[in-house]
Image (cartoon, rainbow, N blue to C red; front, side):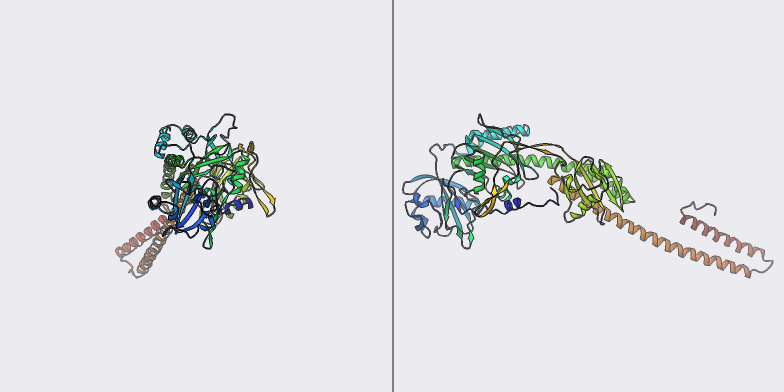
Length: 578
């Protein structure tokens, strides 16, 4: 992703959609929110009165004890206390309301409210406990096998548990687009395996909620939302981030219907606190999945997440160790060099090896140095691109169009990462070759804005047929690990250059002190020669012995001056004078 890329209005709209403030629930369940201190009802779903046998508008302000048995309330209280705040927890199965409807009870606490969600239990609800179901699923995985085989088994196990027509393992890429990497589907359905989906299909607000709600379910994509009364908590909208029944954005329901999906479920795969991917389940007709089955799916998803996180960590350690070895060798050579700039210009192959690049260029003191495959010609556009991104730790892009300019020949390179070296215009550029080819999208990836009575709105794609995009001028993206490694290399080069300059200043100071001492010594010697010459005048005629002694001392002083001068010129001390 380029530091210079501009966010489109479409993307900005996706970024700000407040999906957590839905103000409504899905129609297959009921919601009652009460004060944590005394069970006083504060919020209800509009359909709750039908379950409890009283008018809904009369419920706010009433004690929940009038409608729910004490032992159920105690189990809710104990479960919420054990789970902590903001963690939805399946509590129990209970008979609720005038008709003693068998409901799955889920609860969570948020601030001063206790949110209780009730779902009438399907008649075909299984009897196996969730832990037993999850253990059976986990035993069906080959954790020692290859990655594609592992994810294929993940899709099969979820398919067997839930019975959805299609189960996909969907992985997010560095640019937040997604790709189906494993799939199980019913006969006659078009496969999605290998297809890509744009980042706008699951915008950032939705991805953040997938981190908080590991399981999301829509039993019927054609449901009519049930309002929550009142929809505000004080002066703020009621935050429904953790509600299992939270209503879904209309644009997402339309998206599902356009795909021919009547029911869906998703299981989050989380690695290192980041949404790595999803197990996405689709069904062509409405489908309810019991709460116990969803708990089993959640436990299974947590196991898959742990395996993914462990594998990601293994790969990260391998990359780090390999890069660290190269960095350590680079540091040793730079630290022992008498001229840092000259030494760095000779270490470009080592520097590009740290980040697995195809070429490197160094600009120091207005001169260029290079190694590997590099652009040629007029490089002002490259320097301008780097200067425009100086606010970033390491400006980078995977698109040649971001830095190409008139008179520049990229020679098939596309990705570039720039490491600043301190002085203006001094950079280490690292290049990657472009990867020409096709990307197979599930439908045309660019959403559109359509006019409505209220202006314009985001319209989901209507076709998911294979849509091929020719990709040119783009390299393999710079990963988070690449950027971390580049920032570490930047730090190392900055430190080594600073130390080299400090060493140079220290040597210059020593040289200056030596030269001052040498000049003082020479002055002393010259003063001695002057004294000897003056002494020759005082020698009496005929005092030959004394004259010879004076001349011998004068000759010794002159030879000493000659040797000292020779050393200063870097010549042998016994060299004859020129």
